[in-house]
Image (cartoon, rainbow, N blue to C red; front, top):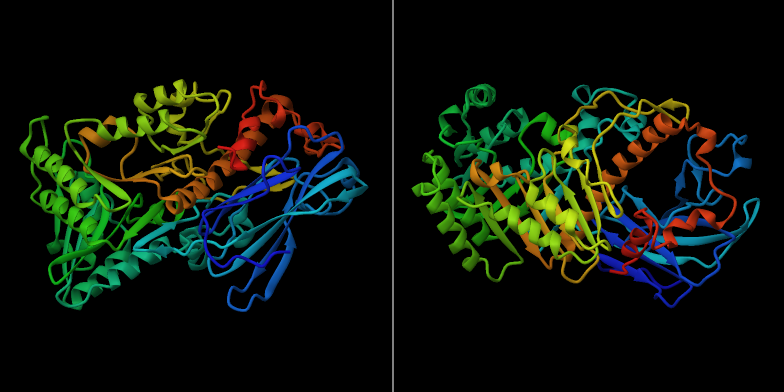
Amino acid sequence: MPALTQAYQPIVQVGKSTDAYQAAALVGINSVCMGWSVREDLERKDLLGFSIRRSEMDPLTGEELSKVWLSGNKRFPFQLELDKGPNISSFEAPFQRFNWNDYALNPARHYRYEIIPFRGNPKQPMRLEPMVLDIVPSATHVNGLGIMTNRGVSSANAYLDRFNGIKPQDSGPAQVWLSRGLKESLVRFINRAVAKDALHIAIYEFEDHDIAAALKGAKDRGAEIKIVHHGKPKQVEENNKVLQAYGLLVNAVPRSNVPGISHNKYTILLKNGAPKAVWTGTCNYTFNGFYLQTNMALELDHAATAAAFEAYFQILQRDPKMGGKANPARREIEALIKSTDQKLADASWKLRFSPISKVEMLEQAAAFIRNAQSAVFVSAPFALDQHLRDALMQNDPKVIEYGLSNTTVKKQLDDLNFRNTRFFVPSRLETHLGQKWDAPAFGNHKIHSKSLVIDPWSDNPKVIIGTGNFSDEACLRNDENFLIAEGDSRLAAIVGTEFIRMWEHYKNRAFINDMIAQRGMSEKQNLLLENGSWANTAFNPNSPSYKFRERQVFVGQV
């Protein structure tokens, strides 16, 4: 086998379309999404699936630390009577699909995945030469851009298995596992502030005691603290409880003159009065935000970006009235956007702030969708505006369009499940494979990341991450911020793999629940086929299933 690669690559590919087999991987920080394919004219009658063996390596010594076969829960009929537990090794029961994902990467390790075609008789199979994918996960911070995502799976079987049903509120280790560095990164960011520095914060929900304690510590060190938070009565009461408990109430301005909600979630670090870095993203400073919902954050050590957020903060802390399209404060924000575009001309991202007088962000998102070549991944927790819905409905059929929303948006998704378009909402899965499946922390609003990823396998991917939902309120009525990146393959791969992680999670729940409810599926019906017919849909371009185009996209045939 070739030597392991030593550098991060967002896309790793082996083989060509003319080869018998080919594979590709989209590589993030904690997650990798692998796809593979068989040449179109290759015989598949005895193709039983694919096994995957994962080797974990020490990047400094090259030592192999572990070698395991990835496992699933489907098996051949003859294996039903074997006591294999809920999961069975893919060495014995191959994956009958053309993609598989691993969500347990350690960015301090290197990995080798051997994807092995499995042919012949299930009881005496032939295992062919593997397709080998060498993976180096991305570091969390690269070139001034840090990306953090929490797990967002407090109701999952993985949580239940690790913590035996203990509620996250009652377990420090569970909270660390769920946060996966998200909350910790904000504490570290705050701890960078020393005497004569400043931390300027714009936040919607501020209820977390650890973040308040970190800010108090910075204040005690001599750093200036200023906070703008949502000022409508119910939320300001909750925010004030924590602010007062840590002596921060005097540092806070409730933002009450916004027509909608003051929905920002960012912290700026200033050194000697000059903005140096900003921590922003989709996460409120709450228990739900850090542990129970899907959320992500960006840490941008970029002075011009921090300066733009600081200029926006200075507008917000005046608490100006924002009503009317010709409002002077709106005009001020629009002028800030224009000047920021010029100052960030050499950066790989742009910034947008609101409220303004146009639905510019919705138009930008819809334009990205309409120009997609292979894939659209959208996490839209609470709204999916008609601009985006129309773009999704009218898009080229070759584009796979995958989405996540909360159950409160379900009616908006009724038309978005056709051909290569699939949207899912969280659903309970009380029992599966003869055992309890859901942990106790389930809720309707599990999706909270607001993100759009376009063509992550291409040379020119596009990403939008922001505080705002994909609604006109986010543009016209709320305080919000958004980051738009074009051509940043690392950002697209990280956000894309984390989206797929959650999309697969809720897709599988929906599939199992539907099979049980609509078709009376028993566990014995959820079996591997003993011939290659399982692959027919993935090679049928006329099938209504999304599997044909998904196979091509995940293997890099964009």
